[in-house]
Image (cartoon, rainbow, N blue to C red):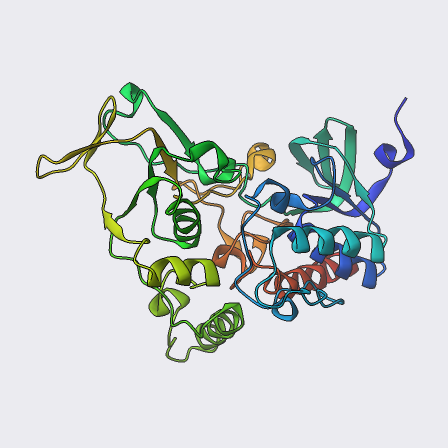
Length: 357
């Protein structure tokens, strides 16, 4: 027998209960709309539950907050660690009594003229609109290199890195010149024979730049583009790596040194174009993620290049579908704690207009 939730039609069904889903929940609650948040995790925290223990934010707590409630300051000062963020997300969900149903995995979404049916591990949920807030963590991206299938060592993505203990004394290649690559390489450098491999020399942002300034740059860039003014600087114009204290310390000590990427992988390591070879026990890919939008596949929203086109956060092919928290694709800095609030607010405003019409 279906539960009342599964026979009821919500104004909005939110798929994903991480930071993007919670931000949407805040504005849906404030708008007094009827909604439910479906989360496939056992506990609050979204992707933050799966990051490595030493991961830190790039901003002070006050510049890493969801709408309505500032993240409490970190007792030790500086950039808050993962556990501080997890505690904040748990308390945020409870503070606003957000209707999160977990663990519920969304398998597929179908539609007709009246709305949507979300088929899940917990039954079918009906909604007039859909907010996809599933993020990217479930879609780690590893590049394809010749010889990878023959590699006898271990290779993992940063999504599955849980700390340095299992790598002590190993020959480790950390691949990737972004923040994850720099932070993991800095942590492993004193404990392993480390090779930090990047496709171009690492570009550090100035040491006094953190998430506050990055958010300001992203906001100004978006405003200029929208207004038809000269765009100005993008975040990537400033650099790729925020020099959090651990990264800065390793860099300044001379133990965090990047080298060029290999050309192919061998049975016991890798080889470079000049004939150089090196043995590795483990390769850690810090090579990013892709949007995890599998539940939307039956809505046929993708364009010929495989991308879901959007106007703001609304899917171009169906304006009742919204995508929140996937980075610049769905709003400047929308994959950040601070930045997602703005796109969540605009999304709920668009839903109100649609329901009102």
